Image (cartoon, rainbow, N blue to C red; front, side, top):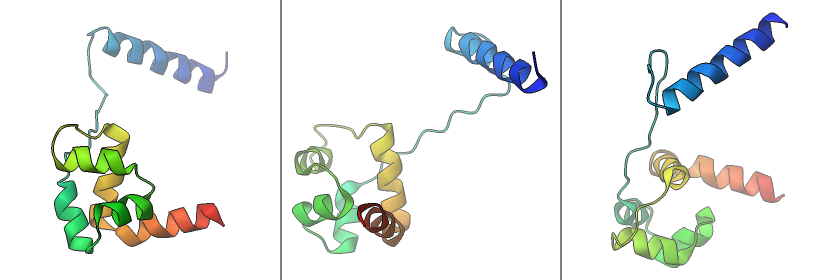
Amino acid sequence: MTKAGSRILEGVRQARSFVRGGDATGFAVHAAPDTDVRAVRAKLGLSQEAFAARFGLNIAAVREWEQQRRRPEQAARVLLLVIAHNPGAVSAALAAASS
């Protein structure tokens, strides 16, 4: 087996051990914090509909997040965090992807 293959296999073994409750040494878990969706949207001056359309979000999800009936999943929390810090980057990436 190659060195790279050995390192990959060892990483898989460590990850499996971690998932099963083993030693977490060498692992870092990054979880995006909750974002106040209403505050981000208001800062941008967008309605719920415009916010959802601009960033490719489901309007029903935006409403439920704002009313705290539902918590955004991890991927959505990451996207909301980026929108809060640099909405132009998200808009530019979405525009580039659709052209």
